[in-house]
Image (cartoon, rainbow, N blue to C red; front, side, top):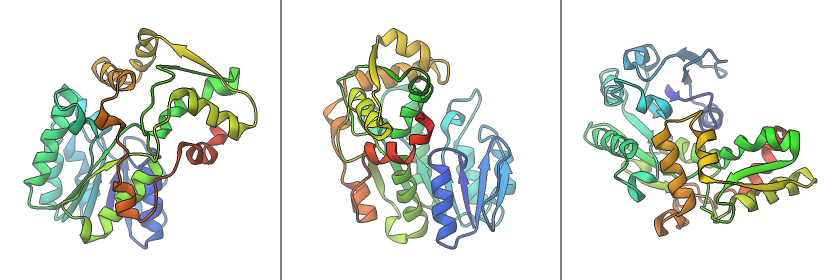
Length: 279
């Protein structure tokens, strides 16, 4: 049995589907009630309180660990989750980290994530670490304005990064959970091309078959919007990357193809699959 945390999110949902299709029993974990996968179960737990994860870990052989906001909760100690997994007999953990651990290692949140990576490396468990850059699914922030006004509003319209389709992250995670060859792997995950916000708006328009106007936000306007759903420090970190990506953040990684034997999906492919959100 494999435990998937963050199971209702953009990575957790396709990962759960991939594991079920591979014949695995899956326990999904999220903060809120959700439908269990066929042949599986769902456990409600807040990862900021690792003790709540114990029922999900009972009998598990592997864990996909996606922390999201749990890493930053007051008093949270994500290293406890690794300890709980070890004590429960879990043998393998795949951790969803971030590319920023390598490219911008000195921010508070990235220092915390790197410390968790180090705990996992030293745990005695089989492990793999995934370090994605920006997610194509962040474009869903624009869905309401596209539906209502045919507008994408974003900062730094002509500065791009090689964003990745979360479904590719899920496919890599499934491979790492199921295949011993990926034990000890650290994979940097990007899409196949550098793409700007303006180009993303054009791709959405192309799939919709109707015009979408691009409106460039100031940094302050963008931060005000982002701070409603993430810590202000994390919003600043994200805007630093989007405004002036480093050469390492512009690099197109070969790791998706190395693991999956195929190129990563393009933003246009992501938009086509998710176009209902913009209609």
